[in-house]
Image 1 (cartoon, helix red, strand yellow):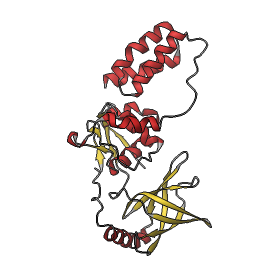
Image 2: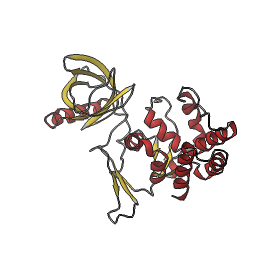
Image 3: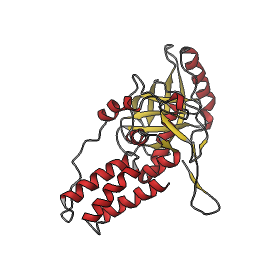
Image 4: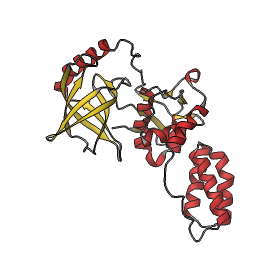
Length: 281
């Protein structure tokens, strides 16, 4: 489980966030036959490593469940059978599972991983993701992948929040309500080389616009409370839009206007407080 540490002096300063993965992962699609309580289904991996993998399941699977996995060795017709524990499951479809191989299965998993690497000699090297990230660490978006455009909702939230750059600390402020899931998504994106730590590896952020538009959330527009005027609601929406985009300073004038037009509005006041905290951080 991901942990966010706090300064032991008690001054409220955020400490580093910790990568939950014990080893690096490689973004590789491999066919997996899964058995879970007598049910059998086939899946494909999103990333793999010698100690675990991530895949998409046809239904929700409870964390800590044990699965039997038959992992294909690409291009050989061979496979290895291992046992894995569900470390986490996404809260909604598509049901992504993070699976850690059981200790007794680690030799077979390592054997399978080595065979897969030999079968696919053109693979890139394993992404070296830091064990921890300090709050001041700068984060950048790399160029979008040409083919791999399957992102979870949490990963898309991280990508949107980094649309205008920022640090690990900035990201936490922007995604505070869903920070636990966002941390896991951040390290997953780093393993997939979508988020990078070096400015020279970053791509033009505009290149991500088609991806984000294609994955734009579908749903009704926020309903204006009857106690809030149309002008106040318009200012509130503009302010929250800029806040969600990481533009806290730009959001403040709009939210101040909304609060002036709708004094005592708890929703507007809450957004104002988040904007003030983000801009001062």
